[in-house]
Length: 141
Image (cartoon, rainbow, N blue to C red; front, side):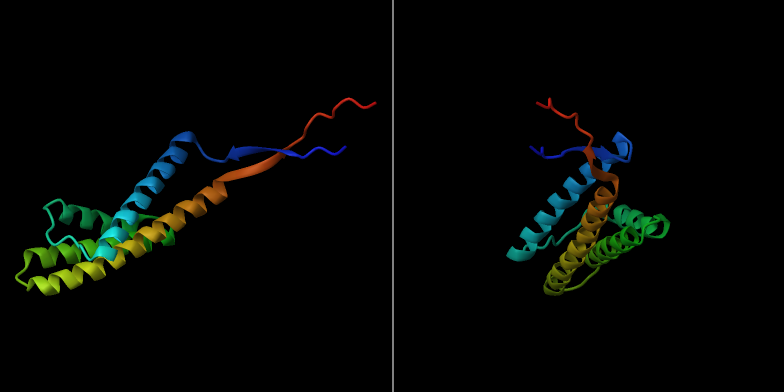
């Protein structure tokens, strides 16, 4: 009789990095689902708070300092969208234009979040492996 091979899951990274990437993936997926809800129902956030500007600057700074190409593009998309939303929020433009710009900004934000999701999944694919375990043979008669 042939037995099915058993597999063992190995992770080629430390636990803190693995947990951090997993938590970041869950958070980005949650924010992406919220943005999809806003995009489908046309409820784009009209006003921004003062912490939006430092967030946009941090995203744009991260776009220049992060090593991965996917992360650079994701940070750039989210940073540019957030900066444009903050500028439009504090400038004197009609609310209709602000709403249309916010809807297009949600699409850019979703694209950036999708890029982060792809980068996290690619990281997991390279770090987590299933390897067959050499099993002990059963008794032979």
